[in-house]
Image (cartoon, rainbow over all chains, first blue to last red; front, side, top):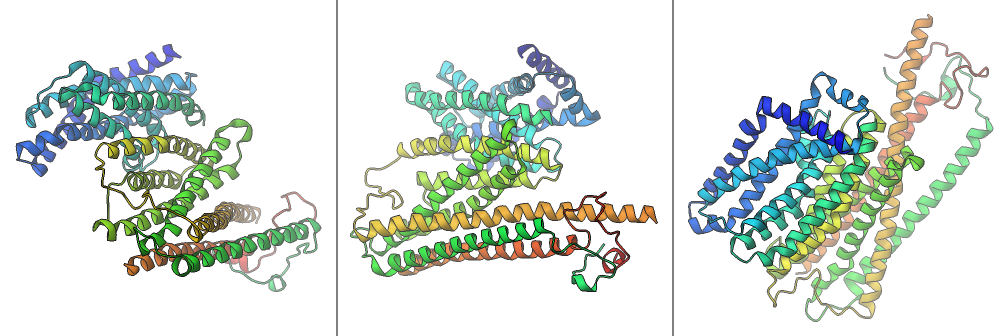
Length: 221
Length: 270
Length: 64
C-alpha cells in the first residue's frame, strides 16, 4: 500500500511542480483572504491581534478546499481517473498518496500564511514546536476529510459548489481546536492548548482511518 | 411522450390479466400495510395533540422559567428525533456499503432518514432560538447545543446535496453512503469540541435555558416523556412515507424508461 | 412571553404537518402516475411471456 501511495503522491507532486497551481493560485488566494479580513475587521491593531489565529485558520481551511479541488481536477482530463482505477492500485494507497500530495502543498501554504499573518496582524510567532505539532495534526485531519469528500464530489458537475458545503462543516471542530491551541501557544502558555491538540490528533487518526476504508467503495465503481 | 390515464375499458385491444393472483395478493398485502401506517399516523397525531394540550394548558408554569418552560415539551423531543434520524441514516449507509448487505433499499432509507432529520434539525434550531429570545434578548446564543445543532444542519444539508448529484444510481448511492459515514462520525466530535469551546467562556451565572437546571417533576415529567414518544411516532410515520416516496420515484423513472424503450422497439418493428 | 411559546408550537407542529401532507400528496401522485404508465403493458409480464398481448395502437402509444 505504501508503495502505491508514494507512486500516486509522486505523480501528483510532479504535476504540481510542473504547473505550479498551488504556488501561483492557491497560496495567493489564501493571502488575499487574509488581507480582505484585515480590511473588513481592521484597522484597529488590537482587534486584529485578537482574531489573527482565527483568520489564519479560516484562510487555511479555504485553501484546503481549493487544493483538494485542484487535486481531483487533475484527473478529470483524459479519463485519467479510469486509468487510476484500472491500474490496480490499492484504494487505501491512492487515498494516502493523494492525501500526502495535498498535505505537502498545504504545509508550504501554511508556512507562507503564517509569516504573512504575523506581519499583517502584528503577531509575534512563539511557541514554535507546539505550533508545528498543531499544524501537522490539523493539516492531517483536514486533508483526510478533504480527500474523501474530493472523491465523493469528483466528476460531479457541481463539484466546485458541493465540496465547500460538504467539507467546511465537518472540519469545524478542527478550526475550533486549532485556533484555541494556536492562541495558547502564541500567548506563551502552550499547555493550555494541549487538550485541543489531543482533539486534533484524534480527529486526524479517525478520519485517516475512515478515508482509507471508505476509498475502496468510492473507487471500485 | 405524454402518458394519459385512460380507464382499462376504453383502451382498444388491450388484454390484461386483471385477476392474476400474484397481483391481487400483493395489493391486499400493501393495503394492510397502508392501514398499519395510517394507524401509526393517527396514533402519532393523538400523541401530539395530548402533548400540546398538556403542555400548553395542564402543566404548571415553572418557578424560574415561568411559561417559557412549555417549550420543553417540544424542543428536546425534536432534538432527540434528529439524532435518531441521523443514526438511522448512518446505520443504513453502513449496511449499504457492506458488500454482503448491499441493497438499494438501504440507500433509499438513508436518504429518507436524513431528509426528515434535516426537517427536525431545522425545527430544533427554530424552537431553541425562540426559547433563547425572551431569556437573553437575542435570537442566537452561541450555546453549545444550539451551535452543534446548527453545524449538524449544514452538515446534513451537504449530504442531501450529494444525493441530488445526477448520475448512475449505484455510484450515487455509494457516494452518499460515504458522505453519511463521514458526517455521522463527525457528530460526537462537533458536540464535544463545541462544548469545550463554550465551557472555557462560560460565566458561572449563565444558565442557558436549553440545558438549564429546571426541576422537572410530576405532570411535567410525564408530559416530557409523552413528547418524546409522540414525536418519535411522528418521525416514524414521516420516515415511512418519505422512504416510500423515494422508492416510488425510482420506480416511476424506471417505468418511464421501460415505456420509452418499448415504444422504440414498437417503432423499429413497424 | 406567551406569544413566543405559541409561535414555537405553531411553527414546529405546522411545519411537520405541512411536510407530512406534501409527502402524502406526492406519494399519491406518484402512485397514480405509475398505475397509468404500467396498466397497458402489465408490469410483471416479461418481454417474451406468452400470455402478453401485443400493444395495439391506442391513446397511450400514439400520444407524443
